[in-house]
Image (tube, rainbow, N blue to C red; front, side, top):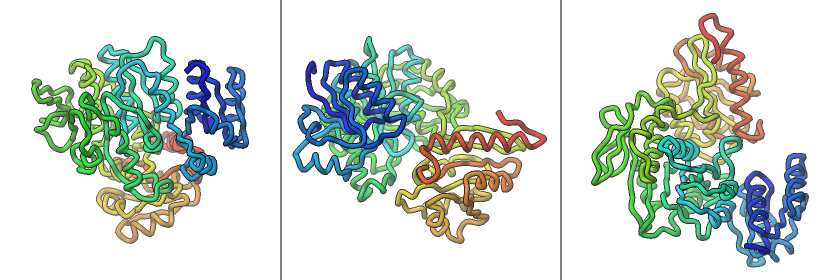
Length: 462
């Protein structure tokens, strides 16, 4: 692309990475962002020093339309004025992973779905690494865990496999993007503050299959018919994973073991499920998905067993952050939708004290009532969505406490919890009413939990 003009709209992590990649490949780069805060200005200055033209505080539609390639960051909604103007001008744009894909020189595993994407992507890469495979992982995984897809394209030498997590926003703007192995973890309503309907959200997820061919391989969640419907009549071979059923070509739990059962291959119990260090049955499903994808990419069963047993818990995803007074404190701040929170509640053993609430994304909170009724000792509600959550669960749930601040919510949870309980932060909402990100929310929860747990005589935080 020597000399090609590239415009990048948005200067967060993915926009910065796309600009670096374009410059590295000899492109003439224009980057714009409406923000002018310190961190954005710092990134802009760094790109200027590399030769990019950077404009903060506005978007020059004329400069963007003059470019041969336009890359739009996923955080910019479709109704943003700059995108409305580009659409009127007949300009097509692509997402940052689509741009990165054009420079990949290795096979690709792409992971999407509503929940479990990051755990599955990171665990797939971990299992491939355990098997001695050179792998690079990134995409929509979140700050601090792995880089954007464009940073992976700068790897030299290129890895044998790329593992990329894809959000619906990123899939919405693909063109030629085609994974060798595509994984769909599950489907549930989400992002209804950005989508007009669940069907529209699923429609963007379905774009994963747009460029399927006979060599494509799909790893699909067996227990949700909507996942198969999402794949439609896409070409390629299909394999399935499930923690509840077995007897199909894929991965499942059999006789207590995470089991690999590919048609035409010997069935192998890879690991006793009780030895998986990740909390919750939904993490068993994530492990099964990762195991299947890694095996289809060439990982052997012995190496995968070792990799599964050493699987690290990811920050803010069912992360045990403190323990004391017989009470466990689990940070699941990444549970930013109802399905994720309901799954976390249902899949943890023992009585729970659950913290819910945050920025309202427009979801129906009624499905939380049943899981809260079944095993929850107390429910702590806070944040912008608090009133709607309280109304949705109604009188079906006992011991509901509404708190004004995050600190008060943690203190209330500490008073409500008894020995043998788990305090679970699984908000079912995004964090933006009180925090800059779910990471900041989870970090604050962990700090407060560690302050409470050591106060008891029979336990210490660890």
